[in-house]
Length: 113
Image (tube, rainbow, N blue to C red; front, side, top):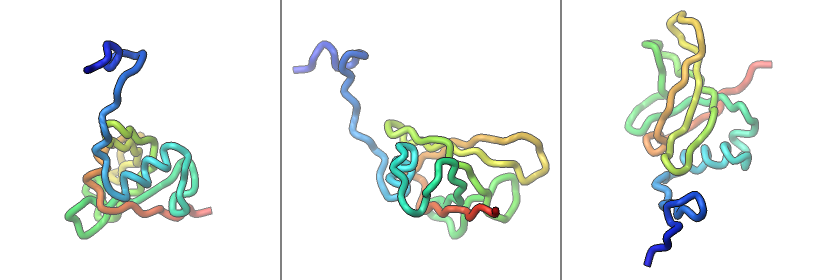
């Protein structure tokens, strides 16, 4: 029998996460400050490898991988938020939201010091 409080702020039952795979796991750990060795800082810049693709994701028609700055991860929806600078000369940072289940890989971009 269901409780009267199942769907209230007093005791909401969360559905099981549908976020599967190592990329989802890495993003979840990063979002919760449980960083792994590969992604060891809070404003991590990464390249993203979509499932079924031979190369990293690029935006704005450029053929070089777009460096994405990780902003956050929502475990319930599997959505990861990233920002990036447009390669087409446009001004202003853009944001993209990606379902982590659509990613086959993630690679940290070395920061030039």
